[in-house]
Image (cartoon, rainbow, N blue to C red; front, side, top):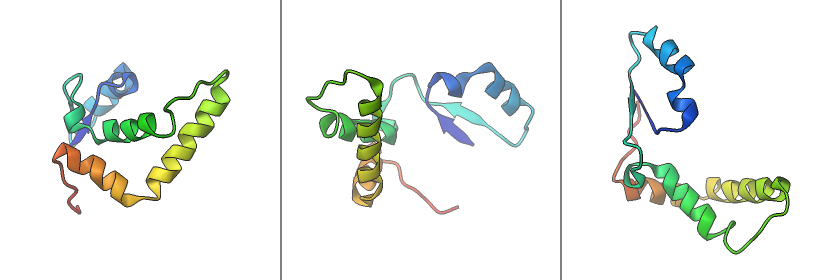
Length: 95
């Protein structure tokens, strides 16, 4: 089972057709807006409150660099990722 949000690429017709051809695969979608169940919302919150706060960009390139720098920082600090997951009440269990 795969649980996804409603990002347009996650709901694309091609993906739905591909998944329909695989009887072993079930795709479930989160409700349209449930930040409490989506740990990615916590990651975005860290970016918005840190690396992207109080800045303006004239072109996309500095924005991309700033987001990448912030994501690298988050990735290297497992406690931040753990905190984003803990906020949802979800846990990770080894398969």
